[in-house]
Length: 403
Image (cartoon, rainbow, N blue to C red):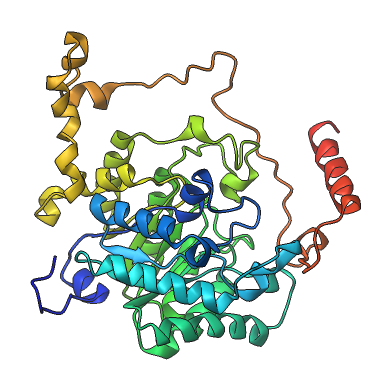
């Protein structure tokens, strides 16, 4: 924590000095499991409707070692809040304001910064104009400026074109801008490579670039390496960040985990362990990534694992480590001798966890519909999805599985 009365170092000041910045985790999935977010729209009404739940999750990520409190504003644009019959009791402005206040309140309890975030929009998928899409970002940005967030993140973009538009809007504030795409090594949904995507984002004004969501840590670190190579080859400079899923996704295609048949309600067998997270933190650091966090599936204990792995680089342990022995050390106090025998690093590093599901496959077959911006199936609407529309989709899904 910054000494009392001393101004906190900003995000670029920290990264320029080579410091490790630990991001927080995946709010929409964590709060959906807790009963505060609706799966489907994945919108953040809870910031205004159940502030105590959002505040508590912020606090848990802070205690786990996170240096950034992202405002819970994922999908908080007006067009997404009202998409497909999603009825609101709160305006987008109310949700964004409440999210900023909660993030700031908890950030002030430690040495954390507040990041205001925007994400991809239904308007872009429905082929609205660049000006229309930028106005949507601008509306959220007005709240972030009013609430004086420390920096801005354009996150979760499947198309680099829309991410560029977001960065162009965000950089108008003069605040630092980070931009992350939800892409893997194959690039964005138009086939633009990770390296080219990163170059375009840097040229648009992002000082920090990387990936978030859709893929597991191994895939994300590989993708950011490709981004870094592209930026350096272009003679540009940037900082790099990674905020992957907490799910193993070796069988994903370009679309990522939302193409997996288990998405979103049966992903639990794929969850990474805390030891997997320590491996991710080390690999990300060795790849030159200094902003290391997580997205969907990440719980506070995952973030604590990142912080614990990088203790030497950071110079301290997170507060949450008071209740966690490194590499299982506190199991030495267990009553059972065979469990006490697991109080060592090499046991957990070598373990191959079983799933307990004898008839389940190791891999799944992604749906692979292969549709993107401009396709009729991706045109969005304010009205609720009708039964006829659902029947058409059910038929199409069955035909793809049983041609």
